[in-house]
Length: 313
Image (cartoon, rainbow, N blue to C red; front, side, top):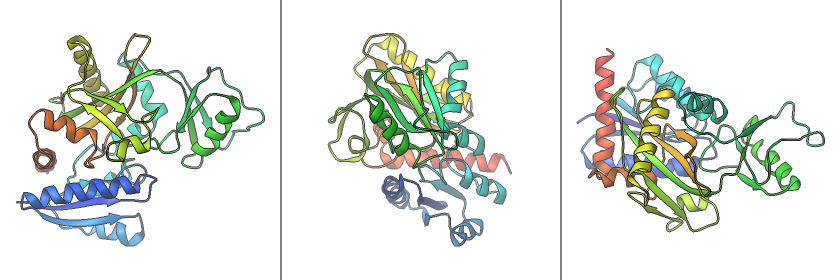
């Protein structure tokens, strides 16, 4: 039995998702008889002091988005020497930056979507132009859960989408729209021993895999394993592990792809270093497909972090 702190909630636009993730993790840890210290981490001085004064064996980070998934909390934990589940500061920050992480994916030979980055400080809606063809996907460069996402089919919608995305981040990422269906690959394992879990195919009820499709009960169907060929499955799993390693991720991640309707290589969307762990989340679905219950999965991730912590002492 270990004494485990669970950080969840946060201040990002993904707060509600993180609250659900935190509850799931806490329930699983208590089921395994661990002593749990739960902290709704909202970034205040008192919260930071509470974390800095933790007396626990390991921290399970259930935060999503800014001030949690971006490396800031990990930096605090590194400074005070407490091991934690998941990736370190550099990998967390890099994965959150969709634009910069795509350069690492491309170096691994993984196909990425054409893009255009808009900076809040220099953006002028009256002078703006792009070489991308409609429809265009617009999203904050450093957010998740499809927060602030727009599928723009004309210039007016594009400018509204950019304005919306810039509410959440100082830069907006514009990408070519790749028609197809989304799949995701969970990666798990200690460094250089990572393995990809079965590919999950996502069929949303809505036109796009939006926030409602991700988190509302019945918002999407998940097929595990995905209804694709063995060769494509192998390709996706290999690329997921390559993307995970390229960013320096640790312990676990979830890598999202689009399979283009027109054919051709899969297009990587992003690497999630702290994937959702809600009842409708994809990572637990993939874990169940290899015989890991939710609590088994949490225990396995916890043990990896604890082992790493002991090795680094």
